[in-house]
Image 1 (cartoon, rainbow, N blue to C red):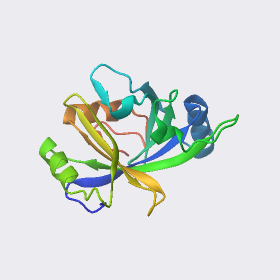
Image 2: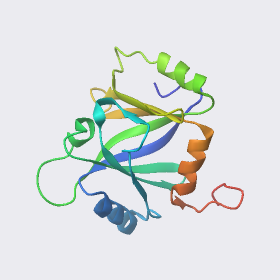
Image 3: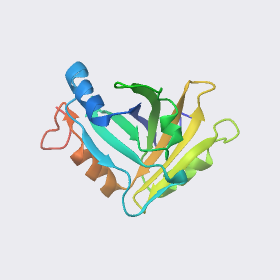
Image 4: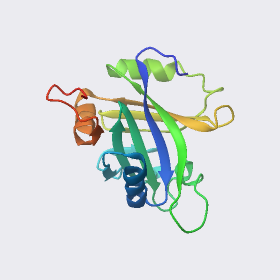
Length: 175
């Protein structure tokens, strides 16, 4: 599952009940360089199950850190790990493997997954610019694995918007 052509570990993701407070905590306690926060409820977004999320992204040492705040009861895949009660909660949720190259690489990656061993429990797309799928690995690893593909334009847009440490140089590479 992890060792696949054109795939690389790209992200660690946490679910929270308050994205602004979680971002502030990650900045103050863990040195995150800030977060780009947005909603996935956008024109053209096809969500399996209609999940509505607020998402925060930062990049540290080449790895993206994602915060996810599920909205209402629309996203049980994410909200089920959050306990009831007051106060800030942040829980580990998944790692992500990004598929590089043309969309054909995404198609081959998804076709290579043995869905009996690694069931796909959530998937979707953003027009022609993004594909994602989550496999349920909780029985063996204790968490989900996200698989994602971006068009070059979408990846460039995300990288440009995401606070990064160390800061990129003029060549676009981190210092």
